[in-house]
Image 1 (cartoon, rainbow, N blue to C red):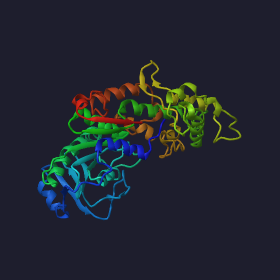
Image 2 (cartoon, rainbow, N blue to C red):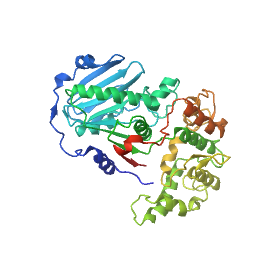
Image 3 (cartoon, rainbow, N blue to C red):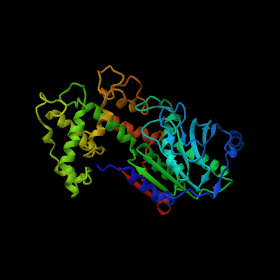
Image 4 (cartoon, rainbow, N blue to C red):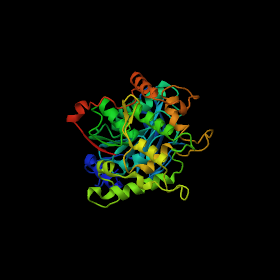
Length: 412
C-alpha cells in the first residue's frame, strides 16, 4: 500500500486552496477588538452558546481537557479562537479566524471514534489565511474508547449531525465576524472517519463544499466494524496455534512484503505501488521457519493461515461479501485491533474489549456481550440496525449535484 507523504498531502490540498502557498491576503483585516465574548454573544442564535473566545498572538493554541486531540496547534498567525456549543443537540465546535482572512474556509474531519475538537489539523488552514472549523462530534473520548455511544443522540451526532450543524452555524458566524463578507470557497479535509464525514456531508449537502480531500474513508461502518470483530475471533484464544502472539511478527511480515513487492512496479522506493501485482505474486511461505529458535521472526503455518484470512475479503459462510481484505503493505497497522492481547480478563485486551465495543454500544448488545459470541448474524444485524437508525455510513453513493460543482481528491 502506497504511503502518502506530507508534501504529497499538501500538494493535494493546494488543488483546492489555489493560493495555499502564497502569503495570506490582507484584504479582510480584523482587529482583535472584535474577538471578544461580548461580540460573539451578540450574534449567537438561540439554542447555542459561546464557551470561550481568545485572541491568539503567541502562535500556538490547545484546548485544556481535549482528550481526543490534546496536541498543540502551532505556527499560527494572529487569530481568534472560538468554541461554540449547540445546547439543543449537545455538540461543540471550534473556529480559527485569522486576523488576515483570504475569504476561504477549511472544515476538518475527525479520526476513528475520538471525541474532541481537532485543533491540530485546523492549524494549517489558518496558517494559509483560511478560517477553519472542527467539531467534537458531540462527545469527549480518547484513543480506543468506544464506550460513549450510549444514546441515539450521541450516535447521530457522531454519524453526521454535529458536523452538519457546526458547518451551518459556523459559516454564519464567520461571515458576521468578517463584516458580512461572503465565504468565497469552502473545502473539507478528513481521513478515516473524517473521510466518511466528508462523503456523508457531500451527499446530504452538496452545496457545502467546493472541494474535498477524502483520505481512506471509513464509510462502510456496518461492514468495517464486524470485520474488525472477526479478526479478533481469528486470533482467539490468545494462546491458540493460529493466534498472532507477538507484535514483532507484523513488522517481519511487512519487511517480507516490501522485499518481494517493492520492485514489482519497476521502481525500488520502499513503497508498494502495485498492490494487485503483490497480491498475485507474494509468497507468504518465506516467513515460515522454526519458531522454537525465533518466535519474533518466524511464523507457524497456523499463523500464516490467520494472516491469509486478514488479507482475504471477508465473506459470510453463505458467501455474502462483508468487507475487503487488508492490502499488502499494511501489516504494521494490524496491531491496532489486535494488541495488547493480555489475559482474557484484562481491561486492556484489545481483542476482547475494543473489538467488541461496536456491538455492545452502537448495536445495543449491552456491556455483557462477549467477542467470543461473534458470528455471521452480527453482520446482517449491523446492516439492519444501520439502515434503520443513525445512517452512520456514507452509503448512498450518489454525489448528486456536487458532481458538476466541486472536486474530490482521494487517497488510501
